[in-house]
Length: 252
Length: 346
Image 1 (spheres, one colour):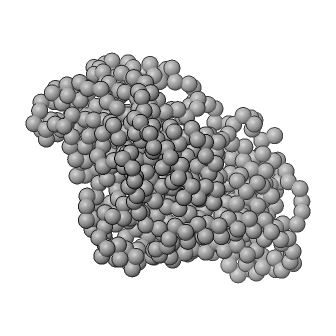
Image 2 (spheres, chains in turn brown, cyan):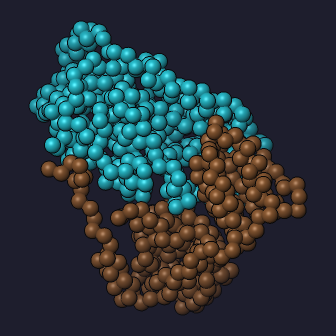
Image 3 (tube, helix red, strand yellow):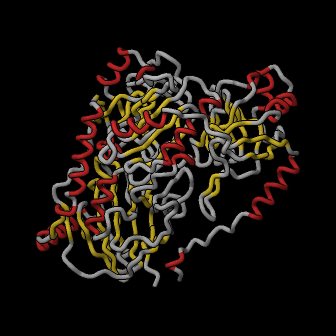
């Protein structure tokens, strides 16, 4: 099931995720040093352009490699991984820095009061704590363009809601455990919603595009409800017009 | 030129799918594509298309489609179903055709497909294919992301799906022999990445139990049966999922992830369905009972080779339909005996 690295280099475990994927787990907890190793390994593996590697997916503390075992047997893939692990160093800061406007107005922050009560803080203090630090983008997952950002201050680190919400609106800013997310699409959600952002983290037009990438740094800039609404309106205006329904080749 | 298939009724969830768009999991986008890629390939081969072309994926209940083209050739692969070709909107009785064959239809005719029998999936390919722009290299519909396929959604009544060809040549229709698209009762799996979250008793219970499919969509299949206790937490630090990943959520019941899975997940994964069984997995309808058989990764690779051999054999299984007279006789019988009766079995 798992293999420890024989030398003193970073320990890792190999977890089969089926016969066409395997997950290289680089640590136990969630922290930025492990994330930096994951991103470094991802980059080095991608640089090899191995025939038979379909794609790579870096997550909180591991890298999942999707491959075709009939082109690249697992043994060969693991030999490459072992080579890459030798001398693997944390990725130098390669990410971009973002300041994303978010609105913590109670009309958008369904769980702000509840989070405040659970953490023994006033709502204003929750906002202060949440917007007072710089977050690291660990991974994209769950929904297109959805960035998992950490680490949420310890006093705001809550377990997920016992009863998930049936749906939360796109742009919802939420927290659970040590992570904070802006949910790019309407979705059912077990996280605590504490605000909303007018920024589209995911766009399908004119072409599919995710704003954030693993390794990026993010700060949140609190804005008023009025500013949120005007930013949202501006975003809608500048968004490319929805293409006509009749495809190009079949115009009447 | 404005050839199209016009949707009179959409069926339950009918979407355009091809072999998917691997390569974007790092953005949160699953590979997607046909739940049963073998049947998709078969339908395309019967229609004379490249096997990876886009085709309609029909689930449970079929659509009714009007032909807005001089002529078109449709091909069906997957579940058995009552497939009727009606001469027009007012016709009550038409000729019937079988799954696993092609048929040429003319302007104004209506192709009406009843409930699917035993299997959850049927594919309809059209000779020449649909005139739809690929998104990220694929025409597959990704419902949750709202993009790809036909306007990023399932078909609704009134849609006109543009066709590349306004007419097709007359020639002998084709049927496909020797391809097994049966619904399985057992799925082969290999140990999952978090199998160590379960005790040996719970693992043994998982492999000896029968589970009932109680809900399913393109993202996953919810099972019900012996609940499994986690010996560690039921939350893990989210990691990558794969099609066929079997998650055990907090309730202890398994969820099998399918083509449109969430790319990452925070539930322990006890096992993964082998890649060779994924096409068959998609066919399993709600209400069916399934069990899991533990195999090694080496066996999984042997099975994968066998699946590719089966796929390579599709084109050589295509033969002329022949027997035109027998076919007309069946049509007459059906008209006389059961016209107007709706098949409602699944």
